[in-house]
Amino acid sequence: FALIVAVPVLYASNDDSGRSNRLILVGGLAWVALVLLNWGVSVFVV
Image (cartoon, helix red, strand yellow):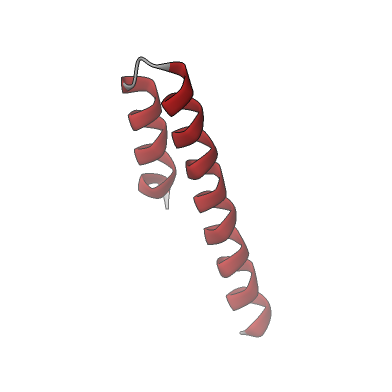
């Protein structure tokens, strides 16, 4: 799980341009939110 969070953050910190930096950060946050939602649903179902 930590890798899923770390990869977008590493990409964002390595990128110099602000616009793509923001896009990657937003995409990473959306990905984390989806994973958390998926995990929460599976926990509630099981």
